[in-house]
Amino acid sequence: MRSILFFLVLMGVLLPGAGANAQELQANVAVVANRLPSTVDHKQFQTLQTALYNFINGRQWSNETFKTEEKIVCNFLINISAAGDNNTYSATLTVQAGRPIYNTSYQSPLINFQDESFTFRYVEYQNLDFNDNRVAGSEPYAANLTAEIAYYAYMILGLDFDTFALRGGDPYFQKAMNIVNNAPEGSNITGWKPFDGIFNRYWLIENLTNSKYNLVHDAYYNYYRMGLDQLYDKETDARGAILNALNMLNTVNAENPRLMVIQFFFQGKSNELSHIFQKSPADEKARALDLLTKLDVSNINKYKQDLQ
Image (tube, rainbow, N blue to C red; front, top):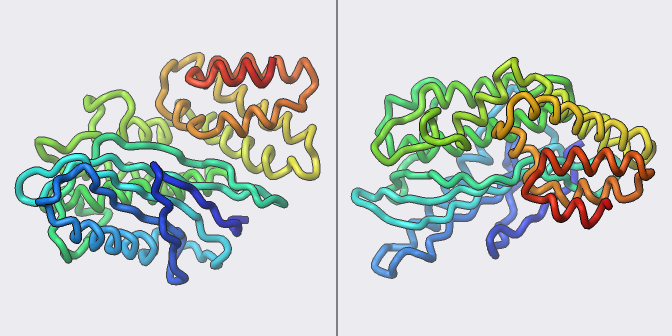
């Protein structure tokens, strides 16, 4: 069930609601250019925001049929930091998506990620074209605009489907990998290659398509479908399933420290996890604390405060 609205405030900007013509995604889009000088025409960014809104919400991203109440609510925030020559821009892209939890009005964070390397070219009113198989053949900086947005659209679908069926997201992860393999190339375009850093688009999709890390997909399914979705009716069993998911992630993490997908999983989940295990028996709480302080290092102090 994906029927509950997911409202987020991104960097102080409340994103506008999506329309009824959406396909699988009900995306809120904001383009912010507050750091650019007044000599830059800011009207074009409003036009870009509308164009991206229509691009994401109007496109059919899968062969599945989604009812209106099943559409995945998500947010895309482009925060432009610099303008270059020939209508090129440097920005960050924040992507958020929620997964509604059965029998509740709660949305669990599915994606809460900021991509630091988003360079693109946009001329007002240009068409936002995208073809899964011809990304690299286009003008690189214009192509990078839609390629990066499409990549995260497929990531949202893949992760969402993974939470409802074991390995359900595989077709969408393959589409995201295809974008990586055909990604545009330019001197300031980064994030698509393994040598562009250890936390980028390449490594995220590599982790999600590498059979070596299959337990990560099992963990997503156990955490959401067998865990959070059961909390209302079977709280003890649900916490056990969530603990099992953490054990799976710990197995992967122990063999592959600093794996991007592990850190990606936990972004935005610390409050949720603390709340889940605060009511646990002492031994279960201790085990959860042990796992969480290994897996989500940036939130160690919070877990110690909430679960000790």
